[in-house]
Length: 309
Image 1 (cartoon, rainbow, N blue to C red):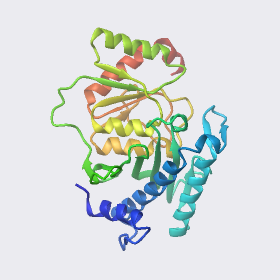
Image 2 (cartoon, helix red, strand yellow):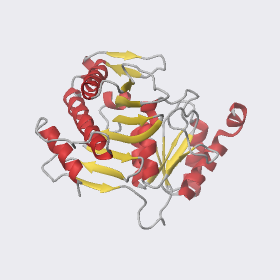
Image 3 (cartoon, rainbow, N blue to C red):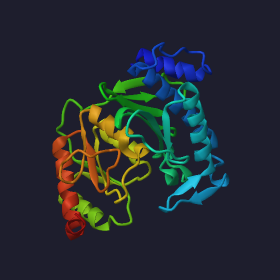
């Protein structure tokens, strides 16, 4: 069931701003309202641009990943809206830059996380937004424009998943968390990587032996894969690079998993610092499954991990 603030934010978007946000801006409800509104705005722009994205200009960044003109346009529009509400907030964007401050309030945005998936017209890309205060994530939101879903969590509240109506069915929402029964097989979602062949072979070997029940690797947005981990079905593995994460990469998804009762750990079982993490990580709601998958990854990486650690 939708909460009052979720309903207000959805109606506010659909009624072109007629819904009134909470009067006090420095509250969780006000932040949730603004976050949902921003992601619904971005989602509409993403969906409108799907047919023309490849024609709008695609460039390749230094890390080899693609970027589109549409992403910069969406991010610039969100940045302008945010700064019109609070000129003192620092906006850190994947496309238009910015530096996360040591103190104060910042909003980190990635308009399309998983650009290759977006260009390939699959459904595993996302838009991410993290509200960060004094380098602590206090609100994280991840939306999937293809499916019409928005997941979010505050640092002190539940993780929630909103499913927006796309075909006339009612909007709905529910709290994310571990299912009543944890007696379920280990399902693995491993992020694609050109350096992951040993790990993937190890996982498929474990599947063949019956140690795990399934391996999938759809790729796309790591942030959305973290939301999938927060649903409680799949445990997510990402080898991540030696490049430190940016604020818009993992912060939102990490908070959603944590507030759902799960963990995002490195291969030694330590919680990651989502604002600057580098190297492999595993995410899921079941601690035992997270530990088992980490063990499989360590075995698959073998001497390569030892030489780089």
